[in-house]
Image (cartoon, rainbow, N blue to C red; front, top):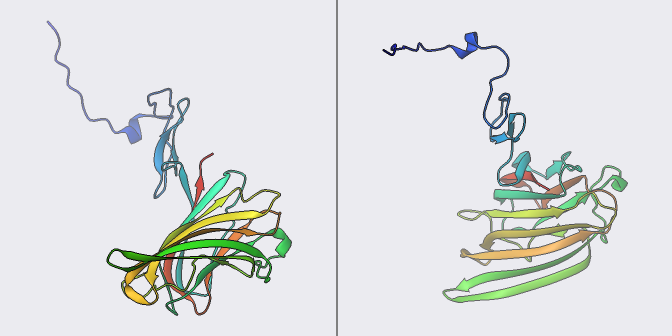
Length: 232
């Protein structure tokens, strides 16, 4: 005759010492933080890691009547490629041009802003009505910033600026490249949209250490900027 066994609730905070064993050869759990995910190493631990489809969140900056938004201090050899997503961006003067500048060590702590610092190429499609649109494009071999739009864009009322800046290999001994996309409203018709995309380079061959976002006039009233490292 088999004995009927009763199991009592175990308080693991008092009854167990050492690390808690887990499957797949793991030996314990580590604490995570907001926006992190539990991750199997496959050999020794079940560790927490900010790993979401290969993207690791490195920095978040929220604008509030800011002259500039600076993404700095997080570019390293840990990642080859980075991407910055910006959302709900509004400028104090709208419609407005929106741009970026890059910092490298040879700039001695100042973002490059000489008239011949950057080369850019941009294209855009602007909705002009039901079933109609117009194209625009421009390029500059000498410019004092990276214009992320072909023209000024509407970012007031129901419109805001949204998009991304992709930064491939910021730590190289060649010119610095970025690629970008921006969505916003048309400046001449608040009910229609503009899609802008393009690429740019900085004529410097030392490491990219920071990137700065800024309007042509006024301030960045609001917006969230998030820098992610892309897994190798």
